[in-house]
Amino acid sequence: MQTPKRFISIQDISCLGQCSLTVALPVISACGVECCVVPTAVLSTHTGTPFTGYTFRDLTEDIPAITAHWKRTGLAFDGIGTGYLGSAEQIGYVAELIDTLAGPDTLVVVDPVMADHGKFYAGFDMAFCRQMAKLCGKADIIVPNLTEACFLAGEEAVPEAYDLAFCRGVVRKLAALGAGTVVLTGLQLEPGKVCNLIYDCATGAEDQVVRDRLPCQFHGTGDLFASTCQGMLMKGRCLREAVEKASDIVIAAIRATEPEHTYGVRFERCLEMLTE
Ligand code: PXL
Image 1: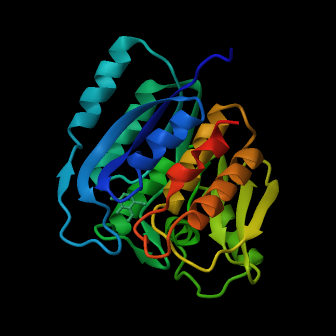
Image 2 (image 1 turned 135 degrees about the horizontal axis):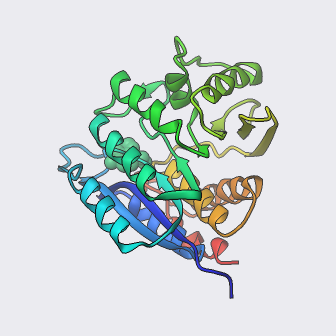
């Protein structure tokens, strides 16, 4: 039997909405990895379409207390992943958690959840982005979409149309933040295709995982992608294999989702893809 891995997932609980922790916990568990959770906030739903009027309970103060208690347990953690964080202040506590609980071999993955389609999500702004850029500097791997990458890289604007040369320029700027590897997700570089660009900041080596693009938008696919990458990496797969599996499960989950069920994807129908 393989030595079990222990992973920390740090993000909110959207009680209804199939995103963040309600995705990460089952996905990482299905990979055969122990998933410890640090809920950063509890929301009645996620903040995206079609929801309005959601509740938001901030759990920032719990983060240092959880960190201190876990340190006292003496337990070691093989990986730490961050997703949706509720405030710029919270990012500082998450950075402290990483400094306190990550050992030399702990894999740190930061998904700088804050924006998509050229715009910040509700509640985020450039001040938050600047703090997130610092957190990215602590990561072995970051998994931004193009909007997040542009904001983090200080680009003037997120272009409607772009090419590989533009994306390469953005990842090179991101390399300056200090992260180990950038996985730039969801790029539309050719019609009908979606590309995930993998860039090793130390060597400049580049790889691409390309899949067919499905002509629809669903919430929570970024979280499914990130948590699948994390689970597969903890399972011992290389980054390319992890990104391939993450791309495949996103496609499978979208295909398994009724078109009217847009607030999330039916990833629960695809979990067996992770148990092989
Ligand atoms: O899927 C990312 C996400 C996670 N959590 C909350 C969100 C979002 C995106 O909007 O609102 C609360």
